[in-house]
Length: 297
Image (cartoon, rainbow, N blue to C red):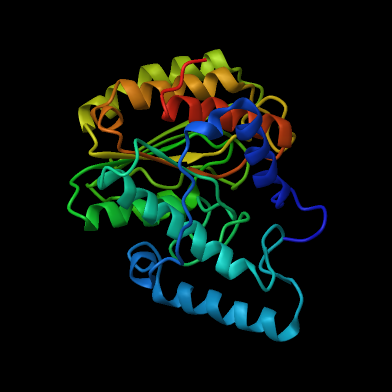
């Protein structure tokens, strides 16, 4: 998205390096992913949004330079393919876990997606990867899909797309007040948002999650869990002011994998969202993926 932008290619390089150094990569099965099928996108986004992004891409290619969409979001000649592959990864991961090809999946993708609404790109996001994945899963015949979002920012785009959908339960925790302005906008019964103040520590966040998320998740009994895995709530990340650490991300993931029917069936798909301190991001992803893969240590 341009020189100096926090949503940078080095994020994925840092994750890959730490997965290799930690030894976690040895038990993973890397998968190449396709361009997303437009039909999958259009379950979550409007036709007008798809056409608008395609037109922006054509304009960027013609001009040969980066184009600003808003104050934080931009497209260069490669962004549109990257966004379509990010969503393609989420869809392919759903198919892989439903088909029994893997026991849980982590999508190390850019750009992130949870701020993209049905008709608007914003907050570094062009397409909403987790919403597309959840809608795809329902199209495959699943009855109940849970989306769990622990990014420091509210997943406003996901909320916009899934609010009122009885087949999807969205659980979110985020710093408030913060970006995006206003926090949660919907009181739809399938949404459970936990806004927390700046400088809230990880232990307090765990208590809130245990009190509010876990009972709701058990009652919903999802067939699949899709995670908006943002690691910018880490205490070392300057884009947020929350106090989570690697152990907190591992704790959340451990519950999802071991204490839910979907997790025990290996039906957990995690998609990278935020996380901009490269060291904290990479360490947190390793802690998260260890639990997804049920690796000790």
